[in-house]
Length: 444
Figure (cartoon, rainbow, N blue to C red):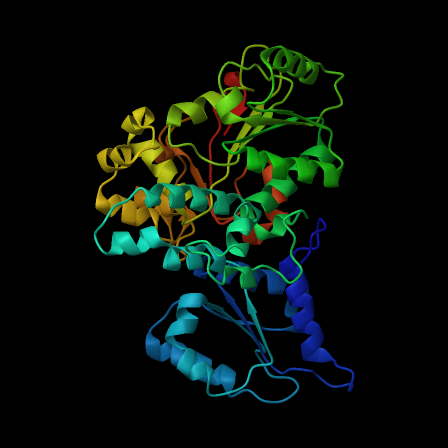
């Protein structure tokens, strides 16, 4: 759904609900009630989106917490509504609340149920062999391949589509989750929160500035997706990965850094070019996925903020909330010893991961806007909103606890990110942002 800019699946769903609630071929409403089931972190976003597009025409019922009796009472009131103009025809509810109170919802009829897409990640966690072994108190080499699979799934479902087709371990029956007629050859950024945010960041940057962008990923398959995106959006780009000779790399970098170069995007494999390259032709860099070794990420992020850079630099790190990516980032932040770990053999995993830590990698926290922020036990935020600013003197090198914490676009100093959050509001749940000293001219 909604593979064109500005026509997201959320808007299409809201339009469909409104149409079915108001008309049909028989000149009467097709349905009288609709239910939207989403991760708990997106319930409020769905509520806001309905208000944004329908204004006061409709009053949705959003259930995001409360006692069992309170929730049952609200659900019974919703289900007992009848007629062409019910007061609250749209129920927005989390997956967990839906499961716990499905008995109440089964007592009546609902014309339409919309399920927000998160099931593929959870299905793999439920069915994958390593997860079963960990629940049974075992560790195995198969955990390694599953970790890589989860990381790729966080980037885009297209990267594991072949596994679903072949029904590999953990993906039995998962093909049904993909949209009808899906093809891995097509570009569908809306199937990945990170890819959707990237799509908007590039579009806003291109339309509002003369800035150039560096895209960094650990996987050449992800670079392939970047290429598809650039071709569809008609962005000129260059790509550097392990297949490119040293001589050709120098020419590509020199061309990109030239002020008259028409290239807008520089795609970079972190393994092939994350160290030593000078890419001052760009001043925006997007780290699309985290590396186990924090030094690799730090090297990659330093490609644009270098001697000779004349513009303010913006560094974006995209993480899928509640997934293995946040766990990797947390290990980067809190266990720098991980930088010496090469996770490629069974003994390495056993040396650096306890059984409990491995189990944690195979969990999905849907309720949290940011598991990383939750673990900070932040005292500057109240009810998920920053009340007190970071201490004086803090900058991009400070601990995350001393960064700005945002659950909406207010307070963001980057106009590009503000606009991207407006356009992809359901894809962004939390932002850590900080500004380095003015004379250093950098934003993270």
